[in-house]
Every structure is written in structure tokens, then in C-alpha cells.
Amino acid sequence: MSKNYSGIREQRRDTDTYTDWGGGSLEAGEKYPKNCLGRADRIFSQGLQCQQINSVMALLSVDDAAFVVHSPLGCAGCCSMANDWFRVGQLHRGNYGLRNARIIVTNLDEKDVILGGEEKLKKAVRTACERYAPKLIFIFTSCASAIIGDDIEAAVSELQRETDSVIVPLHCEGFKSKICASGYDAAFLAMTKYILRGAKRGETEPDLLNLFAPPTVSYHDRLEIERILGDIGIRVNYIPFYSSLEKIRKIPSARASTAICKVFADEFMKELKDEYGISYSHTIMPIGTRNTDKWLLGVAALFDKTEEARGYIAAEREKIRPLMDGLRERLSGKRVFITGGTGRSFAAAALIDDFGMRLVGMQTPVYDDDAQIDIEYLNALYGNFVVDVANMMPFEQVNLLSKLKPDVFIGIPVWAAKLGIPTTHVLDIKRPTMGYRNLVYLGNKIACQTENPGYNKKIAEYARLPYKKSWYEENAFKYIQK
Ligand code: SF4
Image (cartoon, rainbow, N blue to C red; front, top):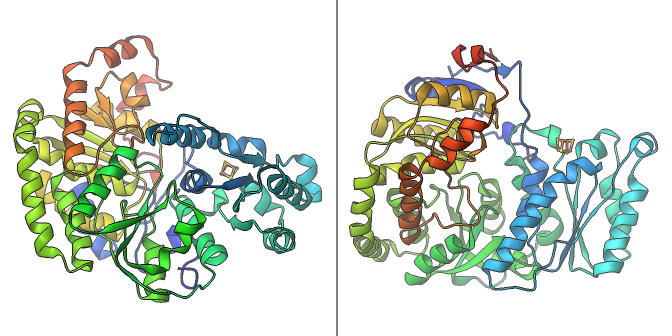
């Protein structure tokens, strides 16, 4: 990855990547392989998620670390959400002596933009060393630090001579990519360059799996995934959420790697394969029975446990079957709109089939080779549905929702709730969604929402969305122009 990959997802060499597109799923599935999807851009954009937040979220729970955000104060606004997740994660792990993440912001201002911000950065890193004496210091760059040309690497090499803390700068400037998952790649590029540093593989642990998990995986989901893998004799090195310097350094001794999300660590796993010969599985997120089966079989094959996994899957499915039958009775035929990160939205689109629900539309930040594999499966399952390739863009979302009128919305609920649509989501760090057992919890959550829609209906009565009536009659993709 560090050798072959720039860290900007739009520039990956082995796939086309579209970030601005809207239309039918059948059209997408047919045109993409022929390179006919059409390059486009939005002439009006309602704000993109910055990649810096993904870098911050990925690393904020690493043990004994401090964090320097080299940016104006506003860029660090996302840290409060990441810190909330960090605190919730501590509670779920039974740690009631909650603490905040150790974050220092350099607070670049107008003067620094003219005179440079390197001195502020050095001061912040020295303060982090004095205050916390951490094992690791992560530095997050920003648009401002890049535009003014601060030489982060030079500052780091000077600072590294003064401290035993391992200093790890991440290049997660928001303007570099429209795809916020590039922020995850920035974290793994930095780990490769500043922590692993070409370390030798050492002795392989034959039952150890590197399990790369994004920060949006709840603790209950982690336990469920570790349970499933443990039941077929696979141990887990869980990275980077609630991991440590030692666990990161252990990565090269694992027998194999996989990720919970398809767009998380995918490039890093290729690097581990090239550098250390560590095989990996890249299938789908383990939510829903079909996806969990596929994910588990992908991992099991790396450990020569395919037959064992097949028997295990049959037994697990049988255990939840009565509950799933009940959920199907409550949810069958409901029409669903899904939005989320690329990995999660496509996986969720397949999982609703477990409950007999139908997909009518989805919003996803990226369309690429992986999306094409999923869309072919989904087209066969549901026929044509609306696809909006968009990083956020709530104005398109509400337009589509008001036309499609789904029975359920799965995703971040703010806008759909104001339209009175029952909402739930699978991007939920606080609740279970993955594997076999947690699917039952998720199904109950969706069913409860559809059967008790009063709260969102009340919100819709009183909340006003900021759009004119005429916008709802427009083509939702009006501002995507070739
Ligand atoms: S790094 Fe850039 S895109 Fe991200 S919050 Fe700061 S200014 Fe915005």
C-alpha cells in the first residue's frame, strides 16, 4: 500500500471509482462494466464528510496514545463525537472510571497561515509528551496545514529525537479526497511507515487472524464476531479500535487478515500480503445471514476450516430460525431505503432479505468494483431500485424519500425522521447488528420502529425541513452534471 497506493481512494489503480452518480440499479449494473457510467460532478454540493474524522475515529481508542490535531479549531469539532464513542466504548467494556481522549489542537489562526504553524505543532507535541508521557502520539493534519506547506515530516524527525514516544503523523487533509474512507487509509499508511517500519515477520502464530474493524463496530458486535471465530478455533488480533502499540506490532505475526468492513483496511491488507505474505479475505460485512456466512467462509478458507465452518453455519442458523421466522412475519414486504458508508450500505441492502423486506433505494458514497459485485446480487434479488452515489447530500435524500415513500429508512435518521418515516440504523456503535445472534436484535429494532412510528410522526408534525415545495418535484439528480 505504501509503495503502490497514494492514500487517495479515487486514485486506486485496480478499480474505477465514481463519487457522483444517480439512477437505477439496473442501469448502474449494466453500464459500469462497460465504462459507460459517465463521469460527472455535482454543481451544487451540500457538504462532504471530511476524511480527517475517519482518521481520528479509527485511532482515538488506541491505548496509551495522545493526539495532536494540527488544524484550526473548527476542524477538531469532529473529535467530540469520536470522544463520545470512546467513552461509550469504555462503558461497554466495563470500565466505569471514564476518561476523555487526550487531544491537543494546535488552533491554527490567520497569523499561522502567513507565518507557518510548525512551531505550534512542535509545542503541542512537546506538551503531549510532558503531560501524558504516552507510548504513541498521532498527529492529524488538515487542509490548512497542507495549504500553508508545513513540513510535518521534518518537524516529526526533530521531535522524535527528543522522546521515546512513537510519533505518527497522518496525512488526512480533507481536500485530498471526496471519499471519507481515505481517512482510514491515511491511518494505515501511517502505521506502516512509522510503527511497522518494515519489521520482519518473525514466527507466525498459526491460529491468529488480524481482524481490522472500523470504529463504528459496537462492542457487542466485536464479541459476537470473536465468538463465531473462536468457536472454529481462530484467535483475533483486533485492530485498531481499542488496540495498542503492542497489538499493532503483532500484525506481521498473524497467519491471515480480514476486515469487518469492505472499505476498511482493504489496501492495507494488500500491503501485508506483498510485504509479509499474509493472505487475506475480502468479502462483505458480516451483517445478515447470507453475508455472515460468506464472510465466515472467506476467513475459514484461510485457516483450512471450510468444512468445519459450513457445519457451524448450519447450526447457528438453526438456533435463530424460530426467532427469524417471527421477525419475517412482522417485516415481510416492507419497502426499505438504505444509506450508509459503502461497505455497510451494500451489506445492509442484502441483509433485509432475511426479513423478507424489499429494497427501493440506497445512498452510497462510492461506486466501484466492489459495489458492482454487490449490485449484481441485489439486482437479482430486488430488481430495479434507485441508487444515489453521494457523500451525504441530504437534499437529494429527502427528495428521493418523499417520492419513494419507504416503510422503513435504515441509516443516519435526522432527515428521514423529519419526514415522519420510521427509522433505524446499522451504523450504530452503541447497539448490536452483526453475526447471527445480533441479527435478531437488529430485526426486533426494525420491527419496533415500524410498529411504533408515533415519535417520528410527531417530529414531522413540528419540524420543518429547509427546502421549498418545488424541490420535491424536481429530479433529485438535477445537480449531477456530466
Ligand atoms: S481538514 Fe479541511 S475538510 Fe476537514 S474539517 Fe478541516 S477544513 Fe474541513
